[in-house]
Length: 327
Image (cartoon, rainbow, N blue to C red):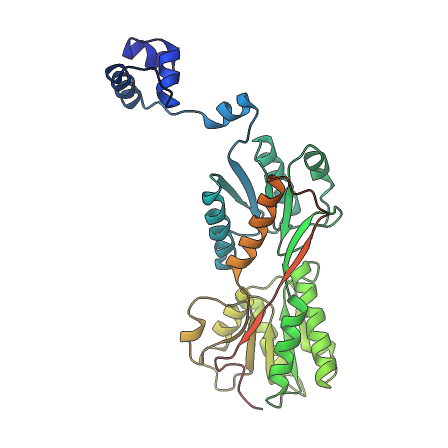
């Protein structure tokens, strides 16, 4: 502001009035100030301005597993749209399923004095957030609950989704239904495995450990898992995949195969309806998850002091062809 004032030949107070759209500045003077601002590339430091006034910094922090995953891209877009309507910006970071990285990002956002935090937790220990929460920073967990703090949480019906997937495959005569899931210490993976077990019991087909392969999956490990399930004495005739990435790896592994199991994937994904056969999925709305979490956060910022809430969003089975193959 000193540089702008010097170049325009006015006082710092005049520059302040111009940039804050205050009255009392002659139009010609304001024009000189604006020309100096353009020439110098001056930008207001909104964070410093707001902190000086003791108000909001106009930002919220969003910690995701991987912003490159289309599912989390949908969550991010929804949070951004809600925040734009509320006059705030979103700062985003990926934890890469690393609890240390999650903590580092969350505390970095807090050090920047974000107004609130939205977190897809990577770990089970969130006591590090207690001082921030006590100081008035609202925190909402989404997709998975916090490990050791009580806070607002938005989830999807993971158990109900895999129960429905198994029931759907069983309705086409399948009795040997396999499940490929993510690492079991991840909340969503464990819940979907629980739903698979429950679905097997409800369908009267029993639960067999040999039909389950859990763990961080890449294309190679999914290919090996499918080969192992096919080579069993009583092979799997159908598969439930535990998330969109596992589904895509499975489709690559099965491409060109003469004998393909029926398949239902958890999470929808782009172009699933255009493949051959089109992929049957358990779908849930990523944007609805982001919107529900953002709405909860902004309710807290608006002064909502009710006890922490746990919101579970519904899922739905979208039958397209891959899950409707009879034995």
